[in-house]
Amino acid sequence: MAVITKQDRKNIKDAMLDSNPVTLQVLGICSALAVTVQLKTALVMCLALTAVLALSNVVISIIRNHIPDSIRVIVQLSVIATLVILADQLLKAYMFDVSKQLSVFVGLIITNCIVMGRAEAFAMANGPLPSFWDGLGNGLGYSAVLILIAVPRELFGSGTLLGYKIIPQAFYDMGYVDCGMMVLAPSALFLIGGIIWVQRFFSGYTEEA
Amino acid sequence: MDKNAAKYIFGFALIVCLICSFILTFVSQSLKTKQQLNVALDKKKNILKVVSLREPLGDGATIDDILNTYDEKIEEIILNTDGQVLEGKTVEDIEEGDGSLPLYVYKENSGAVAYAFPVVGQGLWSTMYGYFSIEPDAMTVRGITFYEHGETPGLGAEIEKDWFQENFVGKKIWDLKKNELRPVSVVKGFVDNVVANEGDKQYYVDGISGATITSKGVTEMLVDELDKYEPYFSKIRQK
Image 1 (cartoon, rainbow over the protein chains, first blue to last red):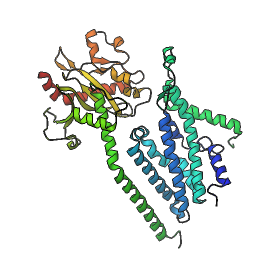
Image 2 (cartoon, one colour):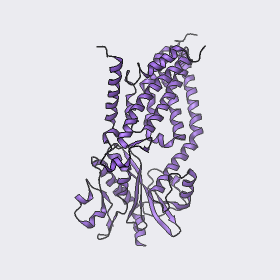
Image 3 (cartoon, rainbow over the protein chains, first blue to last red):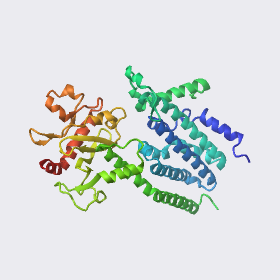
Image 4 (cartoon, rainbow over the protein chains, first blue to last red):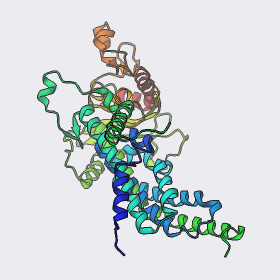
């Protein structure tokens, strides 16, 4: 059996583009607004979410045939919550500064609809390996959108990327001013809206009436 | 076995709970010391920042540099509400609501160079936590810093920016004419436009436009906190 089958590859590609959890299914928007002021926090958030998503999918897929139907959602939640707390504890121990900035949003991965959604829709019906790739793909799809939002927000909001000054001092001397709105949450909403619009323009996707 | 039998469901739930709680307990216990070290280090960094050392630690300062400098230069003392030093007590002994106050004294060879203490106040959305430090004359502000708050980015969150904090340096908290406490306060707009009397300007700092309530919160925070430490500082002034 191949480690990654053709179908898995297609699933990953779909999760990143045609059924992207953020832009197509419009899930996980809350954290996408909150942690994208700086690229660094966005990257750590992507890493945490992707890890939790992939691992929770694997664990749930392994025990899927033993989970009683009547308590299946709460069992999924227990697995997810355990993994999220693990991620939070690790960040607090090894990346203290970033974890301070992310504050409650790591904990809120538990309520991120993407994680629950993939557990219920995919891991409950597929084997561990495809589930892992599905989790990874969806995590990467989420990450791609977050990075697309975080880069312009940090660049135009603070003139930096990953904390390094990008916009030269000469611009500021000539009267250039950082765009204050970029550091506020609404700008992320506008950017997501823009990304969704561009993507749907090319894919031709429309909401069914 | 019947997957939908009550026995099976309870048994399954129990096992899941046990495994999850075991993993979490194990991880939280094994990472505890490391996490506490991080919190303590963060606090020490903030205190060193607010007392603005004569030889500041650069960006490349290692953890050991910070800890050594802290141990060497900063003395922690505990005060009661009457401004008396409680001998033999440490910061760890302070319990919520017992009225004792931590004070961090920055010492060079010649004696005390600055006094720093934690400040806590209400902003617009959140509780703001920071440190405030004054010169050995107990009248002049040496620095202020905020390490945790949830104010609006770009507006209230400007309290963590250098431009706002630098405004405090050199300002006064003591009214020499009336001989009473007069904590520096944040005005709405610019001090130069708002305060007419030249001599009064040293009691005010520029406000943050669009963040009136946060600015007010900072002012009120300083009134409250300086009041608590006044019994001790008044003794220093008399010396």
